[in-house]
Amino acid sequence: MDDLLAEAREAGVERVVTIGVGRESSERAVALSEQHEGVFCAVGIHPHDAGGYTPADDAWIAELGAHPRCVAVGECGLDFFREHAAPEAQRRAFEAQIGIARELGKPVVIHSRDAEQETLDILAREAAGHPVVLHCFSMPERLDEVAERGYWTSFAGQVTYRSAADLQDAARRAPLERLLVETDSPYLSPVPRRGRPNRPANVAHTLAFVAGLRGMAVEELDRITTANTERVFAL
Image (cartoon, rainbow, N blue to C red; front, side):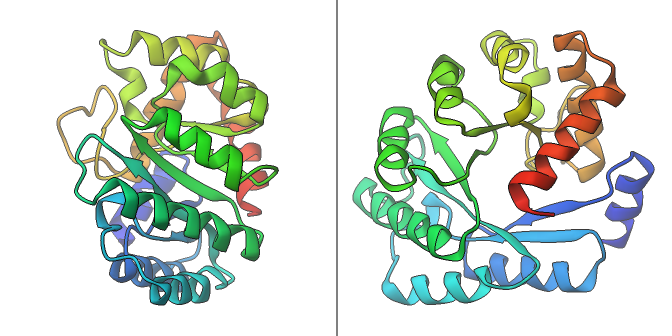
């Protein structure tokens, strides 16, 4: 971890939000945030692991979520591409975690794959007026709708891929005041690191690519996305 953080700092990355996708990884994320300056965390249960969700999960998510280094609940949501958990179980876990985020007053970080309409329906019903971060943004055809709702669109490394024309168009048009960039480590390494495990430092490549799409100086987009990250996660 120290090496990853040192590499990230050399690339200009000063703070990291590490994400929990279940109890074990969420506890580890909290511990890392306690051990390393500049590291914060989010806690929750990924839709892949939502099959056994019970009220006991509500309790530990709420407990870890109240930690002062925890800045969000998630990633949670719906994944009907893999369907490692039944859709109804995913819905139950998703709605419960939105409720916890609301109680804690912290944003909710969303994973959605092949479930755009139902994800947006649940968010409209359960998260109205609450900060929503669409992690690894992948619904470019719904950009205008999510922008109108005031959701945060977070672009990961796949926006740099040659095949991602629709996503690149969304990155050009997304409201600057709701634009974020991320790694999704260890996945979706951006060009020119594609094919290798992703690392926090690589967010600099995604930032530079999105700046190019928008015809902006990298330094200016860096300033804006840093301010956006500070605002949504209360850093």
